[in-house]
Image (cartoon, rainbow, N blue to C red; front, side, top):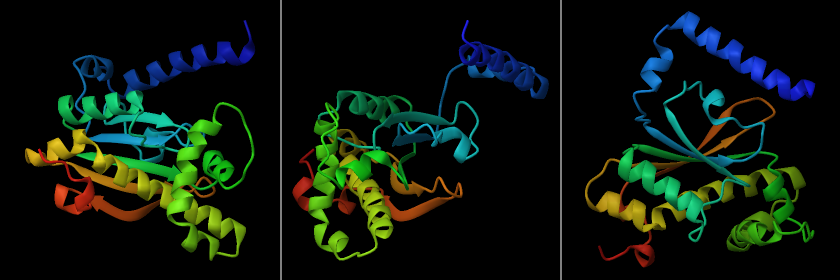
Length: 211
């Protein structure tokens, strides 16, 4: 068996032993079910593990990841996760977390043809189009890239608020907060983008549904 693959299985056994050493009832409690307070929508990038970077144990974070942490209105996978998190698990917070150095966002700054993913990248290009005046005014390439990452995360938070799932939850008075973050792979720190949507009034009127 391949060494790397075998090591994964061995690491699992070590992890189980470590958890049981700290708490003999750890897995008994996990097996009872989950009630996480947070839904994390993040990038698929292997350097951005949701639980680890916020120090959260298993059971505290419901996770959906895709390329460039996108919230696309026709993505049934994301919508299914969001619906379950909001309507069944009753999470109180949804965080969209981007990260500096994101390959998906970087590709969206170019006209490269990379295959099937071009169709996904197009949604990120829309964010650039919405903010092209601000972004094109930034002369430094890295600074422009970093700001694009931030704006992309902010736009995805706004797109969450546009969903009927979130608006219906707010309409019935559910305590639900939407946030935008960016993680810096270079130092491990999170930047809060100070986006906190918590009711339908925080959404532009053109997107408010008549519920």
